[in-house]
Image (cartoon, rainbow, N blue to C red):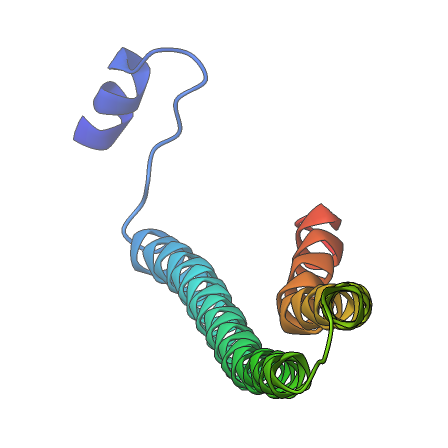
Length: 161
């Protein structure tokens, strides 16, 4: 009778829990809650693993880009050194040629020939160095560019996918 009086005193729409259904309902609710918590935790762990893997890929791309850049700069340095050595050899040869001239007219011709050849070599080699530098920039940026493309593809997908 006391429980009937308590049920009558409750607001409309409120249900009472009897001793028979209470533990069963509580167990079902706890089980559903634990399933949801487990599912959420698994999703968070998976997202964290994916983020770590993506970051690892980014670091590998930066390392590869750096390796390509350093190797390319070394190659450019060697090419530049070869250019300077070639111009130095050309200058020495021009100086020797000037030392053996017999007239002022011959000296002017040797000097003009020397200057023209030096300029042609300088322009040709500088163009080669510029082309090599451009190729180096493209090659060293390629791994990072690929990661950027992957990031756009990965993060432009909806989260539900």
